[in-house]
Image: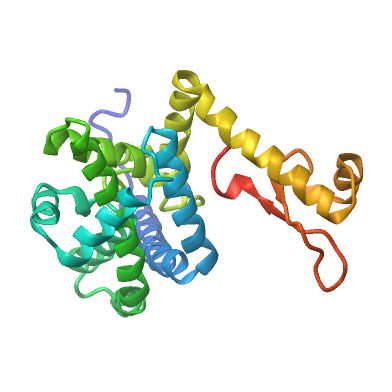
Length: 274
C-alpha cells in the first residue's frame, strides 16, 4: 500500500504496542472474572436451578419426549445413580461432556492452563472450589435429563450416536458455540448461550408441531382461570393489578394472596419464550 517501505517513529511503535498489551490484559482479566462469576452464578442460584429443571422438562416435551410418563425420568435417574452399562455406553460416547457445568469447569481449567503464572489464577482456583459441590449437583441433574432423553430415543429405534445428537439438540451442547457467541458471552452477555441455542429450537417446534404449544398455552389459561375464580377476580381486574413489568407477558397467576394481600404471578418467560 501507500505506506510500504515507510518508517514509523520508534516512540509511536512503543505506544501502539503498550496500548495493545493493556487492552489484551484488560480483556484477559475480564474473561477471568466473567468465567468465575458464571461458574458461581448458575449452580448456587436456587431460582436458576429450579428453572433449569422446568425448562429441561418443557424442552423435552416440545421435542416429543413424553415427560409426563414417570418411567422415562426414573430410568434416567436409575442409570445415572447406578452407572449401569447404558450409562457407561453413553458416557464413553460423549453424552455427558457437553453440559453447562462441564463446559464451564473446562473453561476455568483452560484459563489456568493457558496462564499458569497469571496473578488472576487464585480467582479461578477459588471459582473452581466454590463451584465444585453445587456444580456437581447441577451437572448431575443435567446428566439425568440427558440420559433420560437418550434412553427414550433408543427405545424408539435410534442408535447411540443418533440418541446423543437428539439429546444434545434438546438440552444443547454448551461446548459448541460460534466464534461470535464465544466473544459475546465473554463480554456484556455472559449467559447468552442458552438464548441463542433455544430460540431456533422453539421456532422449529412451533412450525412443525404447533399443537404442543397450544396444549401448554391451554393449560396455562385454564390454571389462570381457576386461580382467578379462587381469588374472586376477573381477567380485567387481574390485568389492572399487574405490575408494569409483567404486562404483555405470559404469566401464571398464583391462587393465593400473599401476607400483604397482594396478587403474585410466575413470569413464564423465565422458562421459555412464549
